[in-house]
Length: 373
Image (cartoon, rainbow, N blue to C red):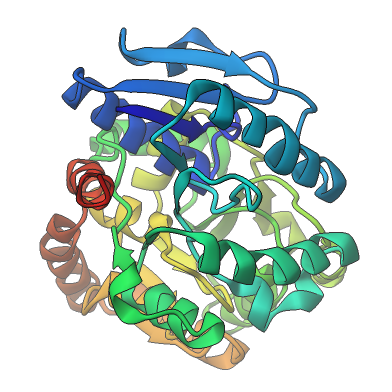
């Protein structure tokens, strides 16, 4: 079979959630199925580290697709042309975008449709593109993969998709995320938090991640507890961040809020595994990989009670209403004062994390492809 894959988000040192999904699943699928030919489509120069096996042919096609107008040209002109030239059997798209004008069978991974529910979080052209084209992508798709039961039901409801068309393939967790020694924790805290305990948030600095409200809850926590805890924010800016910047600048404890920016996988592992607890309270999430990364590091979790997050965290989290700074603050107080609760959450996380692995993800995604032959 000739299987063409949209790999435009495989960017060295810049993998985000969908990029990691692409990397981890394709690395396994291509190596496990040498009998098939895979063609990886990049929109710019690529790293050879993404060419996982001998059955992969990398192809760069233009234009670089990083803007709604260029997305359209890339998928409707360049991708269509390649699919026809190769006489491809399948087109797999881990970021959900398809070529509507191509006759090739296509399987997108639509991670979530947050833009349907929270269009105000996105720039005008981006939200118009998503809300115009993704319903068409869902209709065009031969099969759809998504990353949670929540997203499956949401896609089916919003786009009127029959239930047997959409399959769930949970995300996994990078194998580097394991607990670290006390010595590593001490050195990491000295490097990032002046030797103090800290809460951690991991993700893009995006309005739906609810970071502004997290800052306010942290301020309330500090006032109530009179503790020396810090709050580490790990991630890069994305789209609108004015509310985040304002919440930070007005915080009484902004000197205790530390922005690390994007970290290498090695540093991120140490920073996460050395934290006291994860505070992950977004308004909307299709899955929430940081939750299982924390569980794999024996770090307890404070999580939103919305969208897919209860499904992912199971019983291994303190759940809060993301609209309530009081609930977020109360959870911070509870997890710092109740050591038995903290240990119970860690134990439950050790059980919950076994549900998720990239091996399982790759196998389930491949099953969708194979069933479509």
